[in-house]
Image (cartoon, rainbow, N blue to C red; front, side):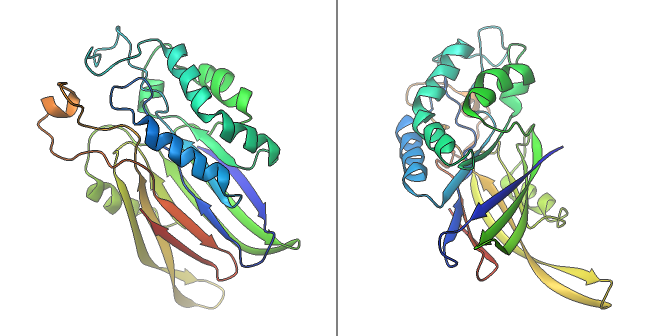
Length: 266
């Protein structure tokens, strides 16, 4: 597991920090929703206090050699072409990331589409997607430590666990599994192409005082930018007779350091 500490210095003590994780873009897939992706990138770029990280499956990474290949759904078969399209669509964000001393994008996770393809390796991702854009590689699961300061004073600290996920499963089941990882303040996952936000109340025991206390944890699925159902195609979800469509976009977590609270919405 990888980890990274993020320190943000507020201009005003009551500024709110917003996190919009971008996951499951699937560039190269027929369902890639370019317009929605460009809108979210533009919104993140426009707001100084809005941040993101990439949560895996930026590329669809399905080639003609893959057993999942479907000519109806895989519009771009070349991995490098998919990567260059991602780069071009996201370049403005990377420029701002550099201007803000590499703090705008908190990291880059890989997903199940990334690591199951022979042409896609950790070295490929790091050398062609992370290093050129000054992105921290965080594997398929990692922890972000968020520290928010004002005037050199620490106002709040939170821990955020993200894992991309793999295999089948339903969002409800994933949320239930997340509850068992209450060591972190925030637990997010991708892969399911659903947007979910669910606050939970858990109990901790304080050994120093000998008392039990309550605290909030925040669970979420990060959504997608790939439509499930594409007109005049016979895709994966069609063949599985699945009726749950993708939820385009991402959730937003808002960190209020002055009040030491987190709020989420989709």
